[in-house]
Length: 478
Ligand SMILES: [Cu+2]
Image (cartoon, rainbow, N blue to C red; front, side, top):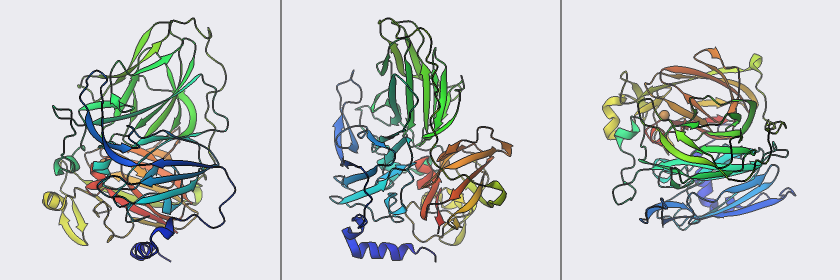
């Protein structure tokens, strides 16, 4: 039986808050409860500049509070909307039941201004995750609605320090206020809307953003890219970092590339760094950006003057234990193809807009659509379109993504992790699990997963302006 969204949403409307009630026989597990209250408020983004900027965020903290869980717990997160517009919360990377995924018009009704929604789900995976609205994401996320969510491993690698850096940006005018230019077609059809001020944990990037360490310590640094369109290329001066997890999932530890660790919007990386420099020293962490652009200082690793904690690095394993993700069997997997077209540069693109063939470049300005997936373009919350794929529950899937655009797209699938098999047909030796993967311009990517989680799942570009401009569809698992 297909899932009938309209029917679901009608019955959801009829039942109202009843849908938010927990299942009658709740399992006897420990429940961790948090409250998230999105609202508008003023913050001082730069401790060196007293001017305050208006942002939207959770609990009058910017970024929102760090939510911490242990694997196997039950999460209960009560959201009370104090914004003037509808919102939802999506738990990026968490394998939650479909009804808890926070996608308005697909998995739930939007939380109206003044309304409330209780998210309840079991925490299946450990790792580094984050949360943000899925309602008008291209506006609500860059206004500041995001926070980190960490699920501790049962047996984490031994470190002396565990730091989270939530990277983002904000577009400020001369009064240091948000530039109110969300959803411009120029951004939707190009590289997306980028900020002009880089932020580390909600504060202006720069040498004052310090990670204080003692010589000899082992540091775990979790980087999260919460920017709506900006890629970060992070370079660590004076330190060799090991990559131990992508998108929260452990990988075979390997040296981070010296020319920078690239994080597209939505992506996370866990690094382990042995801080073996001398006491009192300082080393920059930089955003190396695009070639030809100047590099920016994100922050510094600042050594205390204390004597070294140890003279040689720890020798214990740095591997992050794996989660129990279902392994795709490539021999019995079915092949599915998604082709991406559109954008302001590149070949003219014919797509179906409301079922009618149209040339995307001709209707861009009028319709606010700039991209197609398998010839379809849809608005962020359009309900009239069919899913991109219909998969059977338990189906082993190889998804071939073909990017015919001149643009890079960080592609995100909800409710599942996939293994990255190949880039432009060349095998990817690491075969890491990801929930968001960078698709380079005019390239192809093959990924594999088991469609285990029933429901209708978003599959979209995490440049949020691209998603708003049509690069958003759904994959149904039933
Ligand atoms: Cu994109």
